[in-house]
Length: 274
Length: 274
Image 1 (tube, rainbow over the protein chains, first blue to last red):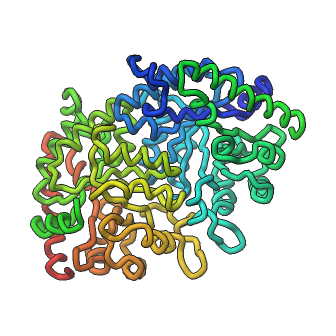
Image 2 (cartoon, chains in turn cyan, brown):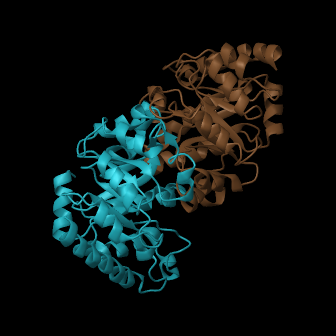
């Protein structure tokens, strides 16, 4: 998917919501456990319920891998099921030496190899440029590079000072040379004005994938006010607050209500800040 | 596996060789392609051929993931096949926020969840302590934290200066507080004396997993001279030079010869530097 196509989706749906498919077999409604593939059945119903309010879906790969080959099959069915005009993110946080990153790229981008055909994959920056490059060799596929994450541990290294910059700022600055904003996004777990303004100085045109709004407590208003650019430039993720809105048989209806609520708030910010 | 048990293996086999099972369907001998599971069949024969000279096996997970659910099954069979007194490393370079890292830990450590039962997993440090902690909750399982990798991109961030230290040195220093040398190893792609001496100052007791010796050109002699501690403290990996020593029907015999050659060199260094 191109940047323009993504922006068209955002404009059509008046939404920059990404739904995180962090589907945990221990958390889904128990009535689904009698299904042949409960994980896929849960995802299918969540997708059907939220598709009108959502421009992207982001399965966190850990949830599928933890179930071995079976989980991998559920993931494959899920990705096939998501309509092609929705942006898909393999939240995998991969990264390895060049030839190995090439295999991870095949894993998530090359359907003929693994059965998966994501639009993008999250990549850890620690191993540097040659660990990221192989993901950029696929047309119309995206790297979403970890910059600032939303967990407490982001203070351990990401927020250490390299000269006059934090490490996460240096990651953005350095990687700006690796690809343009048509191929590279950043994970930015920031909801505070000062950090967002600084990030927008370093990466004015890139999309930012923002976790940590909703269940994790960030403010959608601040993210939108300080993070939005002229192509929106934001994908804001919500996982638990939507997919686990109810643990009963009405889980999909409740997910729909929650997704719609977020979309309505987003449509307001699009009118105000775009 | 405990540190003591690992050291016993090293002493018995007079070896600290780790064989990297980077098994690529495009590189294995063509006569294996008629097998039901060519990847597993290749691994099985490599393991049989090298087991007397090898204390650890390290499948790089990318090679298996790239084949989707089928690859995952080959991986599972491989891990089941490796004798329990050999140390096993899931070279996965994972790392995510706490609850998600918990799922990755289940993936590689909890057989009842994923079918896999590795002794250790490689973890990327970028997301900090709470991304590593969940892997440390399993008894007798190990985290092998990326410190300094052997690729060109290691210069982009790992070798940036944080005060008077390189980032990779800070990673070692900070993570020394997270676990002791019974649970934590480091990936150290260093073959030069100055770097190894500095690393041994920061992490005197930890095992170091050293890639990049052999096909990638590092010197086993220097690594052993400057990296060895009183429990050996080294696992030196070789992948391609051993597993692809021949592309013909004699691949396993040739792998055996190469593994034995490395083991003989190692036995000399153990006598000299331990």
